[in-house]
Image (cartoon, rainbow, N blue to C red; front, side):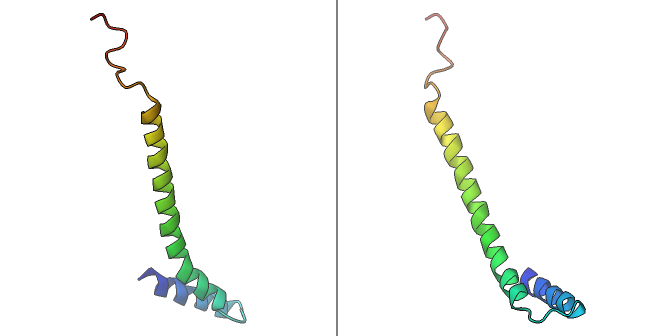
Length: 69
């Protein structure tokens, strides 16, 4: 639903400032939502992998270390 609204607004602004063609607006309105979803997925995967590496490097029995048996 966002793409048609962004496209219509972009073409309207392009006509107001005498832009020659609207292909750049069309391509950005179509591609940017896809790229933003892909980048969000990559960012989440990076954060999960970073947290997993942190927990893998942590001592396994940190709560029992240092306490007398």
